[in-house]
Image (cartoon, rainbow, N blue to C red; front, side):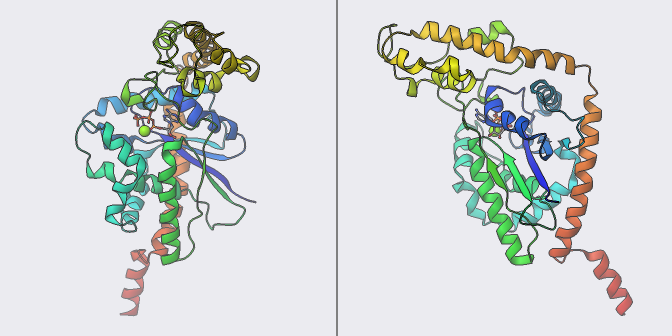
Length: 347
Ligand code: ATP
Ligand code: MG
């Protein structure tokens, strides 16, 4: 039977936000019944920007698990694993091997790395510059083996991750060419809205940029954040013609309204029959209705055995990872124990 697997993850650098929902979690939820899912809490990757804030990472592991449970991911299903990256030393080993397959200058040409470098206040560490390689290891360690045509390795992510997945597939191809067909190429799965801007309307909504509406934010916080949102600067009065395609509030409506509620909004804005204040008020109500069941489930999840979910998921992932590492070491002629024993036998 074909193996259909998902490997994807999030960095524990804070609580999750609406961007995570539209960019990733919505797709994860749609696929969790059909695929074997490995949802990674990327705490080692979090160190690329938070090496001086270990407490934030530790606390955020819990936040991320609660948010995942809040949106409805279900680790009690046998096919759904929550995995803690730092508990899989195989990933560190595979990252080291993969660094040898990528030209040194390649990383600084990656468009996502370039954009993130601009946001980094201090200079980037070597670990930061090579995180797309460690991400390739995260993904390819879970490549179904032996790779069959009908197998799938899907990576549901936001748009900013696509260059990293191209890099992953280049590494897979290079490895396969050098050492024989070992890895399947992964397939990015980007949702309808691959990049949700923050409430500042400029940058991507991000945990680190302070421009996020968090999934756990209460109704008043959500309403306040929405009321301050950036809108079309040319629409100063209700009857001014607006430009919804350039307005982040309109994009949020597209992401979170039902099609019935969304219909006609652009025309009303363009023809001066909908003011920004009213439009934002409606958005705040839509977001609060959307977030209410998430908040309730998240509060209930506080009582759930979070550690057990993480431990069980990580153990299952580790078993797969350990087996795959044997295959990889063998392909690379690095399985020394057998070499050593044959040397002693041969005399
Ligand atoms: P940080 O600022 O710490 O990097 P982040 O908010 O970028 O945090 P990540 O953990 O790096 O979050 O991203 C996890 C997943 O969520 C990735 O698949 C990413 O593409 C997706 N994602 C994050 N922010 C957004 C967004 N604003 N729009 C769409 N997808 C997003
Ligand atoms: Mg990020």
